[in-house]
Amino acid sequence: MSDLRAAVEAVMPGVRADLERLVTIPSVAFDGFDHSHVATSAEAVAELLRGAGMPDVRIVTAVGPSGKTGQPAVIGRRPAPPGAPTVLLYAHHDVQPAGDPAAWEQPDPFVAVERDGRLYGRGAADDKAGVMAHVAALRAFGDDLPVGVTVFVEGEEEFGSDSLEVLIAEHRDLLAADVIVIADSGNWDVGTPGLTTSLRGLVNAYVEVRTLRQAVHSGMFGGPVPDALTALCRLLATLHDENGDVVVEGLVRGEAAPLDMPEQRLRDESGMLEGVEFIGTGRLVERIWSKPTATVLGIDAPGARESANALQPSARAKLSIRLAPGDNDKAAFEALKRHLEARVPWGAQLDVTLDQGGNPCVIDATGPMFDAARAAFTEAWDGVSPVDMGVGGSIPFIATFQEMFPQAAILVTGVEDPDARAHGPNESLHLGEFARVCHAEALLLRNVAAAWRP
Image (tube, rainbow, N blue to C red; front, side, top):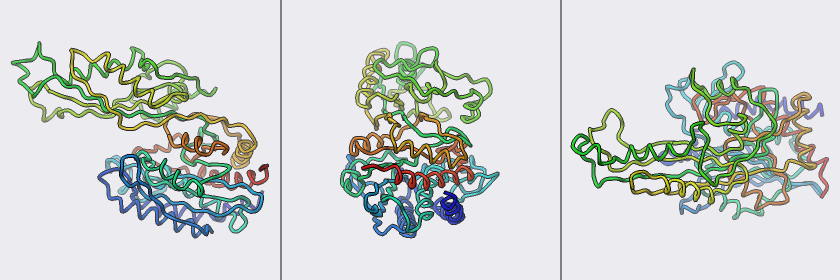
């Protein structure tokens, strides 16, 4: 065990340097961005896997349900020794857009900068550190891997994974595994590891309201004639009660793990302004992990500065509904549609269209492979046992893995901590925790090999 810890420590300087190089590639898969950077990122990941001793590395794409060819993913494989299991290690190499550069405390979000033991940069945590945790474990073992390993690094997770299900189906034989490690979550806190056992699902939808054939004078017609923007605002307000709980009938509500989140911690993590109150009822972890949410992501309407004194004929909003574990995205969309259709004011015309959906998941984290994981985390964190935790975000493809590989144990881990600020300005990675994650993954591969009983 001390030899494995030393081996991980020995490779960490190179792992850190390669992580910083990955961060410099602005691999944003969103429409409107230069996707040549995503291709460059895939090539860089492929080279890292080849350098880590994987004899079979390929870059693959697939055509998703939208009819578009997806962004490149990387699959690297190293066969299992006789009688040993195969472990699939997942991460993604695409990142969120950086947003407003002025909101970052560094000149370039795509140049990694260390401050106070954290590495700042877009993708430094989500999820290029996940990629490098896999590489670190491979480098630590060298030619002595005790299990077969398949590394699967996706290229469009942040943009909705449109082609992922097709990609998995087309390469099912390559990706088949006994244990699947999803390195795209986080830990409970700095110094306390976590195993993610539930994630919420997702329904994004567009809601358009129309009241007029064209914009008209607000003074000449305002009063009896409704404008679409006011109608839309009234309609969106029906999604919550006075406490802030979602009131869409048919959405599932559940219970969360027996953990308590301090209010001040959530205020600090979220950046809530002074005097702003929490919304909803129940424990904070329930509101984040096991109850539905309804968020207005954006509205298509004239901006305040350029708006005319006119009644708007149409207005459109994009909604994001997070689904509690146990719900279904198709049923949830229909429930949302019924709710809005029943409450649209003043006879306004309404269209509700689905943008994307994804199912929540619950993982039964029991059995020898999960015991192996918990032991690995406890050792890497010097005796601190991991907690079972939920996550408010969504990784819909986990449900796909559960369906396609029902016999595999799925372990959802990650590198993030409460201060990582993934998706926001000043995203960062706690370097001390990252070293523990890399050590834990190497220990996990060792423990899985020891615990495996075919």
